[in-house]
Length: 385
Ligand SMILES: Cc1ncc(COP(=O)(O)O)c(C=O)c1O
Image (cartoon, rainbow, N blue to C red; front, top):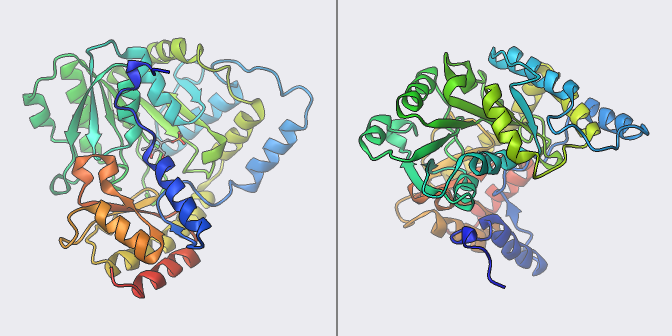
């Protein structure tokens, strides 16, 4: 059967292939330590699980839900944005709950892209931006992020390039995979760039609470709602990746436009999940302090592991990963990743899967216990790589 042309250039996700290879190694008795994927291994707060259990036990919580989500959840999102980002959102009009922010990326592309329209994407960046834009029929234009520019886009260079038909620009800070934090100045320049060029900015913000003291929202910039929408997620900040809970925030008109597409794709989110997510969003500083304590201890050990491999890295990185340049004796991150997998049975993600600008890097996940990271260090220490 011939698949549709829109899938040309959209392959199986790198991790789904790699996990098969790792499974085969495990079946052969290798016991691979996977430091590849950013899926939190810790559970959500007990009160979140208690809300889910209590709500799911009720007889009246099982019906189809409002396409725009429960008011309880939307109000909790509005309170969360106000409390942590000092951004005021109108819960009835400026918030759309999502079944994870990944689906939001696809919905946004499907809502705005006509064949021939272009989408600006970061390189290195989250691979879903490219697949979603491609599926929607966009011409994909990457903008390169470089370490020497703090992994910020070179907006002057972009503005000198041909921006005809560019309709959307994806940005993501704290940046995945580089761990780079945003600055208010960067967000202001992005908003001004989008305004001058008539581009809709899509800020993807799932990592702002991880290893970061000062969460920022792009919507906190004056005039941002006129040119930008923001995706956010409970996957990383509340250890709820498998629950599939995210949100889109922005001006009423954008929310309504994107809902026009999304309401034809799904039939809302299970109410007990939304109510439990509302409980999660009302958690206080204690939650983030405990969570970041765990990640900071793991990060220290990951730094040790990277030093053993003679990788170079910045110690101020946010998010669930550490990004590091591979030593020059490896032509790229793929070769280092393969060598560490084959010789030490430890999987690290090659930076090249995030785009060519990531070729000389690797990315190490913090979603593994300190014991596992210690074991990985031990194995690497006992191997010539
Ligand atoms: C940059 C980035 N955006 C979005 C997502 C998707 O998150 P969600 O679980 O909310 O779909 C991820 C997940 O890894 C990510 O790294």
